[in-house]
Amino acid sequence: MPDLTKQKNAAGKLIEFGMVSHTAEEVAHRNHLDKEDHPLRFQGQGKILLALSQDDGLSQKELATRLNLAVQSTAEFVNKLVKKDLVTKEKSTTDRRKTIIRLTDLGRETAAAETAKVPAYLETLTDAELEQLTAILTKINNNLYDEIDTMTPTQSNKFKATVADHLRDWFL
Amino acid sequence: MPDLTKQKNAAGKLIEFGMVSHTAEEVAHRNHLDKEDHPLRFQGQGKILLALSQDDGLSQKELATRLNLAVQSTAEFVNKLVKKDLVTKEKSTTDRRKTIIRLTDLGRETAAAETAKVPAYLETLTDAELEQLTAILTKINNNLYDEIDTMTPTQSNKFKATVADHLRDWFL
DNA sequence: CTTTTTAATCAGGTCCCCCTGACTAAAATT
DNA sequence: AATTTTAGTCAGGGGGACCTGATTAAAAAG
Image 1 (cartoon, each protein chain N blue to C red):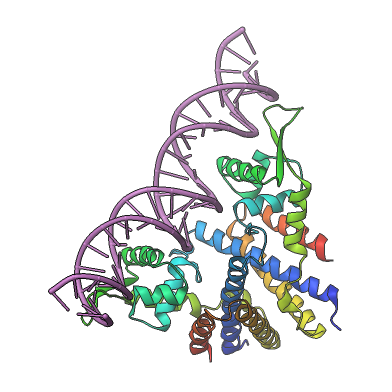
Image 2: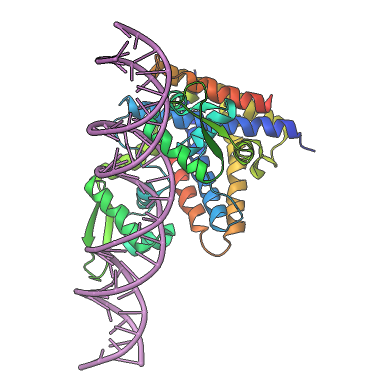
């Protein structure tokens, strides 16, 4: 039988973590210690970048379907990314209706950098703590995947695959 | 000497957690299993609510200063919250330039609900895991507070106090 | 060889966060 | 009493995440 107080404590710390890390990023950004933009990893432009870094050369339609976005939204984000030189658009030669989106080198670096850097706040943790944290987060993430699967049984367990593959490649 | 691989693994899981929990919320919202709006806890209107739930009856100016926002932005958010019946505005009687912002009962509930609910994904963790997680997050959060303090030495360690006090009251 | 489907585009809109500039009303200073 | 500071307001703007509707160009199907 689980201890409710312990759950509450952990929940509080998790919320606190969300708030504090958000603020830390914001402050870093204001102080220009953070050179680039912060394309939110899982929204809009960031979503596109992530999908492409897992599967480059998709068409806009494919991106839209995969990311559960209207094609027009997808087009908008892609165009913004083109302006930032993170992706390129080129007409498909086999089907001239299609536009193929590809990461530029910069885009690839950007997407990778998002994932690859180890935040400073992990550096004071001991090896044992890191292991514990990893184990716990694995459990939590799996729970969340289940939640998502339950809620959207039909549509997008694509998401699960996308995220999992993306990160698994990087870390294992 | 810390193990870099372990750090990377943990970092990856943390990123994954961010992505997955974000998506889970999004999906819940789409499925209308989530009745209310999602006032992001640490941005815009959510920030205001949070500050007030720690210290009710602040003036707009005090809110702006404390939250590092332009007074006009603060006014915007406050007005939106008024429309949602989460806060009230009233002229101060002692200084008629000032507008005092107060949480309504609904606003107080909303702010509290944000914090008080234990996410389902914690329910499968054992007591030991919950304790570990809490301890680790405490360490991480403290690191982040230090980061913020270092970057903004003069201005707003108010933030730290705000968040910390708010959450500490709730959970300890 | 039409008709229909498909991939994209443009136009326009909603809501969010957040800022600067210009201006008013009330309090504090001189 | 006149000036300056302070708290707010309105107007306008920039950027972001999304969406629907209407239209075009190219491919697929009848």
